[in-house]
Length: 257
Ligand SMILES: Nc1ncnc2c1ncn2[C@@H]1O[C@H](COP(=O)(O)OP(=O)(O)OP(=O)(O)O)[C@@H](O)[C@H]1O
Image (cartoon, rainbow, N blue to C red; front, top):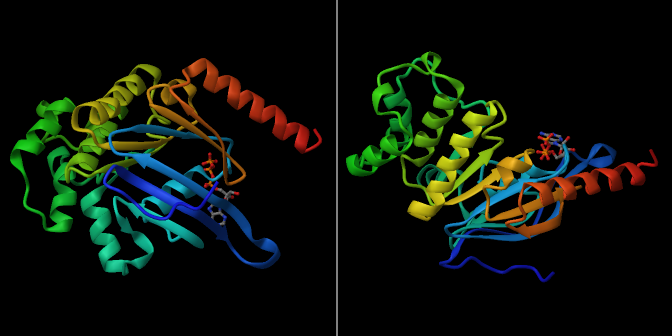
């Protein structure tokens, strides 16, 4: 595949020849081995693959939380390696949202304060219409003055999604957002992420191990050993599970088990 040379108006995120090596010498681990991929605006992508295949590293480097060893990352038409740490932090706060498996809410703050936190950190002026819509959409209107510990896991994840949406980011990166939730609650959270893409044309890139969760996406990408080994448009949960099983069997054969 030729190296990708830049971002465009329709590109939410693009990575070119992305490499991330942890450590040096004989201890070095290649987590990403030269990935080229583009995520269009208003799409929902699931990133899957065996443990250690590089999913979280791809998310962290594409989101500007970690610097690649080599290669480029564009958010829209902005290439990240050209940015100073200060400018990168500013871009992350204004254009990117994050949702993690462990919710990462601040226990001492109320739901409303947690949701407003990105605005306070970036010094941005709140847009009451947008925040009202977000809070409405995640169904938290009657929980605004509660603290995270007083909420269920699903409600806490919905607060985390509302917080990720507060700055109206172009892209939301989610690392196993339903990993700690039961099936029904996970379905609600996934439907919410789907609506973020369908209603406001934001872009969602989600790491998951769960084929059912991945079936909410428009596209499923499978990593193995730091490379993309499958890239499927709307494959459905069964086909995803088949691909993962096949990949697992191939890895066992390669390991001589
Ligand atoms: N900080 C680090 N230092 C050294 N090696 C690391 C570090 N982070 C990740 N790795 C290694 O890089 C490879 C990819 O890790 P990564 O966490 O991206 O995989 P993953 O697909 O997200 O795995 P999982 O599904 O288990 O979360 C693994 O071999 C891992 O051990």
